[in-house]
Image 1: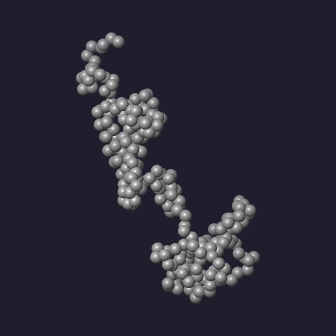
Image 2: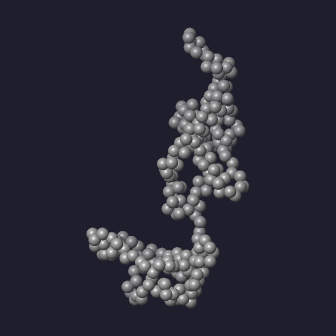
Image 3: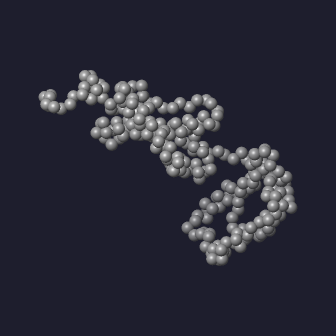
Length: 251
């Protein structure tokens, strides 16, 4: 190839005579943080944050390496992350990767401050659960225990609020009519009955359930009705409270 007069050579940029072996790209991928067997919640929380930063940095490196190949993004960056030891790196490339890690940390921190959520975080909020270190939503089953009437904790205050009286007059007038809030059309009656059969149960013996209904503090919570007037059947079970003595109802 004919050399152009006045065109800078690699040594002019401090790359050395062994260019392109000393070129900056493709950039090496940052090492993936490793989770230890430590049971501390603080340690696991810090690992979760480091993993978020690493994932962001890998995505940034993929864009840079993709541009080096004339593409928008390097689709092989995740496989390269697994085989990171096979990627040749230079001092300049390592320095660029370090800078990208700093930028990834800044971006991740900004996202946390703005309370932005991804699909996993949104699902965790809806399920009232958490996301593990690998990004999966942990669905924690309730530790249900048999219903024991004397251990179910109810509010100590006998006072209650009639929501219809608490609402403004216009909203109270609207919600007073069942047709405005319950839509029975375009619903599958068979599916509705299947849900009732699956969840319409008492998580305990009949004797304990009757004993619970007969408690003085529970009598205001229910009334007698004919089965023909019942719109839907729900279930009731109990889980232990934090003191492992009292029980909390789950409807």
